[in-house]
Image (tube, rainbow, N blue to C red; front, side, top):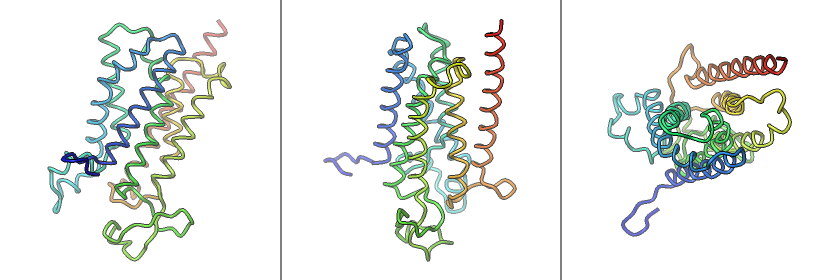
Length: 262
């Protein structure tokens, strides 16, 4: 989209809108538990740039041929507006950026409370970010004739699927999953307060919940990806993250029960 001499990329708008929503939701939730909402805004000054860098690094590292292969151009690795932010890299480095802020500044609550406050907003941010994939016509799945299948121009289709016209809109599936997950996280504490009461549990549930959705959505995708034993790398990563989140929650629940008994 052109606005005078300025080119505005819809993918970038989707990402920025998601970041804004995450911060707004995080500020409100943090305030509701007695925290200073400015902690969220100031931590975001560290977390957002770190998250964007982490997301791009993860994407480039896991899809190197696109940028450093035979027909690749390393300069394209800098063109974030064309798409390509790996969520696991974004979450990891973004969380590290926020953690660095919390370690070096006085805040009203601990880092774990920060993560819990932000979890639903992050899920909503991911949902909004997937709208950018629609504008870029990317990250769609295998061929499909379902009523909601995405029509893909032939120049956007993988060469092995050139004869197919419509595909699974996997970015739409993830948008729906992340939106449902966000509202689930907002309501969850009221129903499982006695079981998941420790700070950090809600963020772990977000990580595990997203991983479940990503596992089945990833199996539908047909874009090029690194494979390990014939399985897409992101499937393995999602599985490892899911197991890690569940392990954390089991240990946290046992610890909480033990402390309650004492």
